[in-house]
Length: 409
Image 1 (cartoon, rainbow, N blue to C red):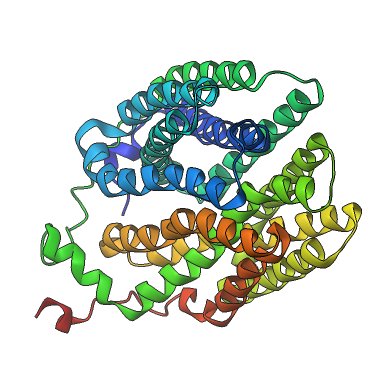
Image 2: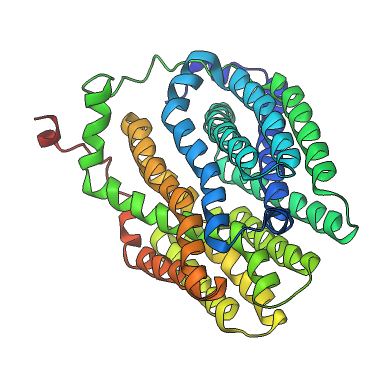
């Protein structure tokens, strides 16, 4: 049910909040892809092997995972507006720290990237909370478009990164400017957020709050399957972000700017998939759509890994991006099918999904040390194949699923 106070919000306030939420998603995407676009140059400066690079990238996922655990309490206490504003400030410091820290060694980069991941994690939760508030006020589905806004930001950041590489702009200058622009613009935009509020007309989930109430959802088979499904798609997305440009440079021997352009193609394909995906989901249902796009992703990975020519790698990156586009948001929607238990189920699914960002970089790095980055990416195809098999878990329920009473015992 929609809270009456939300419906009473003036239309102008809702429009302003909608634009501000888009801005939060877009700038988050710009920050993430700007960092990713300069990974090869920082790797070369630090003389990192693939496995050591994977461990450095692990610090982002570690910060995000810590943030994910704490962000529910942070957002509930301070609200989405103040949380995003604070995390934008922290991200500015972290990205600028990584941009300058790599001149002094690995340790400053790892510390900065941990803070970068923490800021992104809490920012992500808070802007999704605001997106849900806006969606209730508008009384129509708009959340997938917000996620497309994130993808638009990643494409913009990647293209700016490609231009910076081609023009030989120093990494420090490039990322420091991005950090200041993202931090300042986001802090201004979120002033138009509307209060998160509460929903007193919706009864709290049975069993009350607390750790025991939350932990019982870790024993629901459907919720765990959805989490595994999200993990597989998150792995496909994360490995594309972290390794596409490295693979083009190392294994296809392409110039750095070409590798960054392939990364941008991947992100553009994800954006298109997220923008047009909701219509397909409404028309054909979740299971059929995600299985089809997973197969498209598998075809893209096959082209990228075995294509042996740069144009085929670009085609593979395009299909791979389409294939990775809808899994994460569909999994979030499936976890939220019953609004009474959406929060704890989304928490479980998101925690499982973030394990892909935690384990993906070191896994691909260690496998690449044994062969090549391209061959290591076969692991991504294996997980995407598993997601195809278990896609039935995200099927729209015929009625709201109840938690198993046995879980309370």
